[in-house]
Image (cartoon, rainbow, N blue to C red; front, side):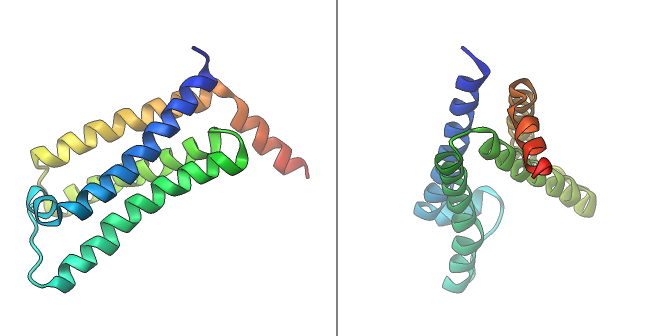
Length: 140
């Protein structure tokens, strides 16, 4: 398979991952909160969780898909996914620094996110298309 095909599969998987993760959390709010060691005291807390987590994840998934659809290339969507997942990694590390604790849940999320970022970076590097696209923008 070519890099282009793998790139399209990667962004499809990332888009679906974000959308499904957000919808799953919406359908299982209490379970999701318990899994990360939180609880909502009132319905306002549940709504805040929905706004912060669910809408963010679904919105990112849709943005990745629409960026691919309108740009007709997977590189921009992959770049968006890599940047967002990299920010998750950075803020997990900030959280570790602030709390001094890395739970097994945080370690498993961090491990998966590192793999996702590495795959995205390798695909972007191998495609070379993003660098060409950016150089065209700079020439205008």
